[in-house]
Picture (cartoon, rainbow, N blue to C red):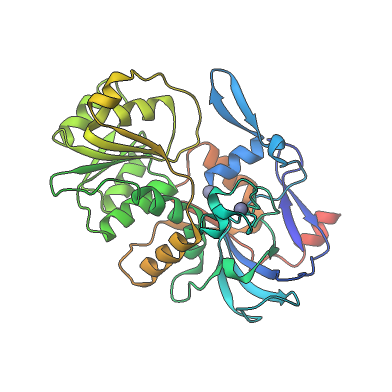
Length: 363
Ligand SMILES: [Zn+2]
Ligand SMILES: [Zn+2]
């Protein structure tokens, strides 16, 4: 198998040839065809999350030590089955749910693998999908997404699922209520489509990039806001007629958190998904007086992914912008993502890997 691995934090990924693993027990060997590039891959690549105030969380403290293969938006073909594997056949094309827990604790048994304390997340704890092959611990983590574009399907495993689960945490919305989407990258675009598919018309897309805002409007946002400038908060509240009932923050900086929390109407919910980093100071009385809800949302459950895929297959969800690139362009793609130059999602093509690439990589 060929994989593109983090060999040193922050340095270009390197192509490596390794022996293709044999599935054991209930495991399934997938041959990867499409692999989405997510912003959180950048943090693992760089080796830390910025906790603000000079504090950092290092991924090596969670067992993520180079050489390591990232990538948690895998789509592929079943290529091999362990002796106890059941529920799929060789040759079937499946989306992989990557947020796999221990499978044995009460949290996992309740269907919340993504909140397990002993995770086996693909591309975070286990080897990920920037590779031609991937071992999945059990066939129940495979989702049938037939009927939709496979590159788009791959992105549903993280960006689609994260957006869907965040939206599920919003309060019931009245007709006059607005939802502000902060950050119009892959996650924000997915959220705008999903809000529209769920009948929410009053969506304000917020970003600092005019191209992304134009794209967000095409995706169905009713209003857009360029958040540069001192008066962004006032302009956001004015656009929404002081009725921002929900904020989905897909950036997660002190600036976006301040904007999102500041814009909330009474009883509103601010949902944080973005992991950009930093810290904020909040005055406590207004949290009570304005009956605000401040909550986090992290990826989503297997059941939610099945719901997202069903929504996509129903045809009611506008596909998010996806650009498919050869797998060998992984380093360029991560650089562009770091610089904020990617519109929507980049998905790597591992189905048509250059047959000479492994030879060159090992040379
Ligand atoms: Zn992700
Ligand atoms: Zn568990």
